[in-house]
Image (cartoon, helix red, strand yellow):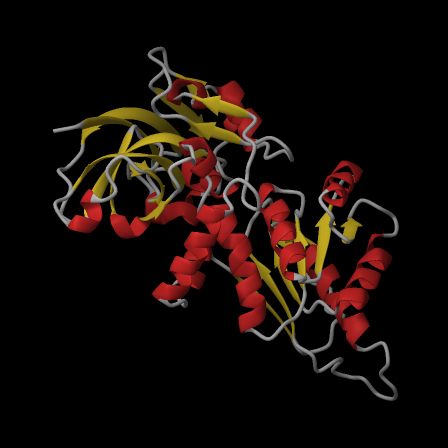
Length: 373
């Protein structure tokens, strides 16, 4: 029986977060399962909430054995996470490594020795036992580090473009656009000639996107932001946006600019605004403050949530396999990610490093190597 060290998270009903490093036994793989030796697992923004919840990380403390870390939960936040209280839960959305064992089906046996990416929600582990359907097989010259971010960012970027087409739009707006995901989305849109409006908040991010060929970039910290946004939406005709921020007024600003463009030639009474649908999907929560809507965009608009797994559930198996193939073929070009630091389990649990990767700074991307000493 193979044993594996793995990171777990628990929030108690008393209001304490505990991240712990535990050892457990893996089951023998079933016929359709494989065991992957995890060699690289990225720390994505989408990992932060499952990992830490609403903890005050400025007060995090590592125990003497360095196998657990605790932090208090912000007061009043426990009702929001009632469904997970007093449960020890695995963490780590995705990762990659080498298949070291497999069940007795031909499909599983064929993967032994191959580099695969996996999407399990439990990849911060030395070994993972997963069904073959949860893995993306890479080419033999692709390393685990190169393959580590094969699911969350690449498939989200591809999913945004697919959503645009499925819903009858012709151009996109994207916020927090200088992120790793945003760079991938730009590369896809440039390749496929899809107009894309990028919203960032720093001149450094404007320069970064300009270097890779982005045409429409709006700096939200600029005094001319709303004017620039209007002009970019007018030039692209964008009526669909994906927002990674969540809080503040950016969603309202996007809808307002879309309505201004849609109604610019209106004459007479325009009580209900343009009849062109304007849609914003919120898929992230970089800003946890309330979303403010200044309703100046008529009556034909929508705001909703967008999740990768729920989007993928709408696709055929053939379509999903085609997306997987594109990711594998372009993992070192369109979907390449440069990691700024590789951490062991112990390094990932230190309060100093947690504050660094939890800051989610542009250009800084961390991964955990569960087998790093």
